[in-house]
Image (cartoon, rainbow, N blue to C red; front, side):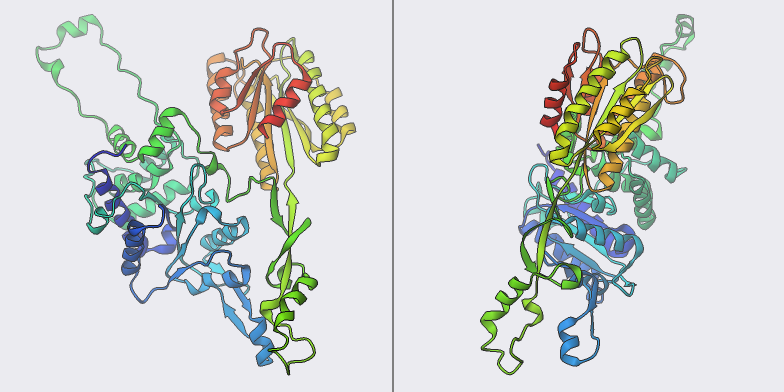
Length: 548
């Protein structure tokens, strides 16, 4: 629920963001604008165009643009007509020094998002490396968990939500936020500590916030930059400080009358934390308070689909395109050219033009890898490993048909080992499981870190990963190998939250004798919890299928 005056503050921040972007489009990356079509969004875009001025380019990216239109290159039709090589400038190079508006950013193809991100990183695009220093405006019209590609949004300084701004407010300048006066001794340290307090893992966020602070060049510029850049990226609320210890009774008796009633001013860190917390969008704040996870932020574009467009795979149709960047569909090309032959008389027996060319659309199935993270510590390790072996072998039996893979991480003693790299080989899996020793301490954080590393490697290779953790949740060894349940438990919860932030589907199987010991870890991981004191490999396999 928005409070009175909140739309005015949101609109004022949106106008401040566009003015900053107009000063340095490429340095600040751009803005993610979450809003549906309407007068408010149109008014904001028009103000951005005015702020850029007529001398700088303002381009709108057509939906479904191909590599040739995006990056430029040889103009085949003009080359054939002129009899000499004719090149065309791509959209990215044409927008050098200006801004590109991307409509329906939540539907961007992963390949297009990757090319935009590469141009933002290097400032160049196209086969000849033409200058392409531009800023992006991603118009996000997604519903529910739909969102712009996270890899692209992470490179943009600002994120604004105009859905709560009424049209009448869009005709004004809004109401600027009064920043608290804070002595900024070290803005770099302050912005980094704020990013850590709000759970922002990306190092780009404080870097972009520092650029915004330098562009503002005003008093409390770092506070304003933190509010504009860091607040919309918050993944958690800062932990409250511990309550101050009460002084001893003898000191309280010696306190002069009335002196104890005076309150010391809040430290600068607390003032800045409160200012940034107040700027978190209400919808995001509700999610953080409820412990919800924005799963769409963990994937780029539509990369989580069972199938993805690829250069290899089974054909699923055709589309207009350049045969140099795909496989020519000859029959579809002839069908497209046939109706125009009578109008093209005099060009030869069969006149085929550039618009007739069709290339095949291919789809490949995205491979899924199940990463088992098994607790191999303690006296019950052999029983757990036997059940894990049964679950791995049961899933491998399906892997031959589904072309999926499994991996096994075991943790015991003072660390974790990758016993079985991602594989479909049943023989290799049996060999790895047969030689796995058991016993020792429980380095749960190290095991979760190793499972996360394997899963992210699978994702970078274009596959999907599912993490299955078999443990009783009673960690007693920290990451550095030192003992201590309190520290080991805190580090295990941190590792579980890292899995959650990565957006990996997960299952926690509680192998304790009574169950319930691993439930807190499952909640921190946003994973499905399964209490099985007497493990059954068939039940584990069914649970894994349910979370894919």
